[in-house]
Length: 330
Image 1 (cartoon, rainbow, N blue to C red):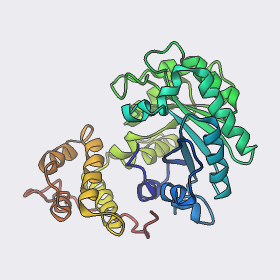
Image 2 (spheres, rainbow, N blue to C red; image 1 turned 60 degrees about the vertical axis):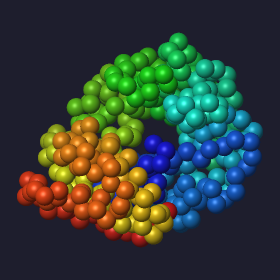
Image 3 (cartoon, rainbow, N blue to C red; image 1 turned 90 degrees about the horizontal axis):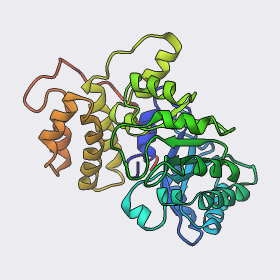
């Protein structure tokens, strides 16, 4: 989720009910303690009296690295700055990250997972929860359970498991049944993750994994109302209507408007394309907009192309639903 879940996105995706907590994009830790500005850049909520989105949803800081001492030093720095939770990323499958000994690359050696988690847990000394996210191994699943047990032994408060190996990337299917094998052997809470795009997939992931909770990533970008949809179903047993294009367009437009105070237009267009690309696989209207706008580099025409009656045709007689236009946090 690097480059996608900044403070503005967190705000927009938590303005309706459904999410219990959020995690920042990862702070890359190499071999030195990072200055406060790096933490504030990734988690500007640290500057607030409560480390949460404007809707009150807690924000935990994520670290990515492999050197236990450097991770511990940066964990201490983050706690001094007010972090309320520290999450360790052992799940990123990106080749660049793995080539530099980060993310899922540590899943080739459970002992390294243990040392990283233990170092951060020792630095936290019980003041804030330390959590971790893993995959079902690197090239295969032979070490999946060992890595999960290493995270628990190191002091992880809970464990998120993405239901694929690093080499499987994001290719379907997600192997939620494998999460159940891990959950049965751990005493800490295990949270299921991976390919949860719809209410049906949420229920299937829960059923096959046996987990009480799930983590949503790309699914929330694809459908900003996914968490709200799940929570409504949990409470009432009823299904909310499908998210209309007007709602999706409103989120994208509000995001762009608020980013203009911080980023060049071309960068904003690139981020909008990244977000729209997640939407298009599950929404016909989003796929049509993406096809029409994929070569556009100017912000104003791009935003015009998102509106319900563009390009050049009506779209289900929709009107844009208002999204709270809070002051930018990033």
